[in-house]
Length: 324
Image 1 (cartoon, rainbow, N blue to C red):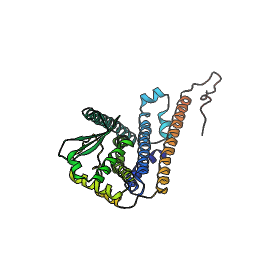
Image 2 (cartoon, one colour):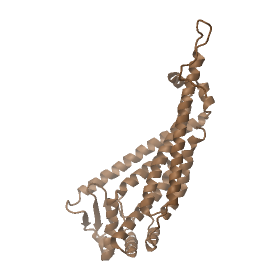
Image 3 (spheres, rainbow, N blue to C red):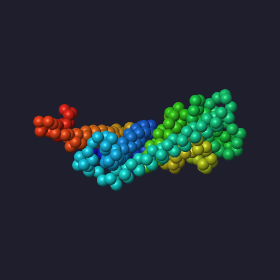
Image 4 (cartoon, one colour):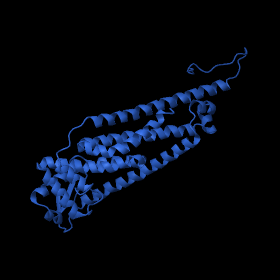
């Protein structure tokens, strides 16, 4: 457990460094799913590892050891984790859980806000054109999702560019990109090392919608022009509860659209899968070692407290106490 319990931390740090590169070498759709799996697995691994380390400290409290009927000395001999490490792990886990709860409340409020905005829109049709000179365009997720575009935005674009803009917003709704965002934000709240992954994920979602729009329109340059003009015109006027075509790093998105579509690569996915497998395997091994540690400590406590029999022989532990 002394080594395996720290592997999830190393995997999370490695993904924080590799995630931005992953966003540029993989097709956006694959990159988004890869980042979602990475966030989920590493967040669970992070919490599990912190929980195991914290347990080694809590288990050494005499009152806890008495309730669990194990030997503190045997526990320390089996897995000598410093109390400061265990205490720090417990603190990090508590802070992470609270932060994730706060993030969950924030995401729920954004969904409620999006629902209220949808309720104020006209009932007919997926597309809603508002009579506003301020250029804006965004998608409101929900059932059904709605696309809101102002007349000011429509005047900034040509006919083909309008088609590209609407295709981009429809991709956000059709692929349920808001669920990816929620997952990344919750994972980053629990594990601060995953914050670069969450930022990269937002960029990947915009790239995914760009590529979907390019396939619908059939012209990557038209989509690039639409993204650039919409971003320059809107200047951040989109609703924070929505998914907008003007989000993300617009210059990088335009450059990617002016280049050929990204090729399908397998090696980055295999490497990432191996990292996540190592995270899961190490956490399972650490949990198994922890269980064995507690069993051994319980057997040691039973043996130490066993009283002599009438024949002068000492009673041994029960049949389930085996030595190594």
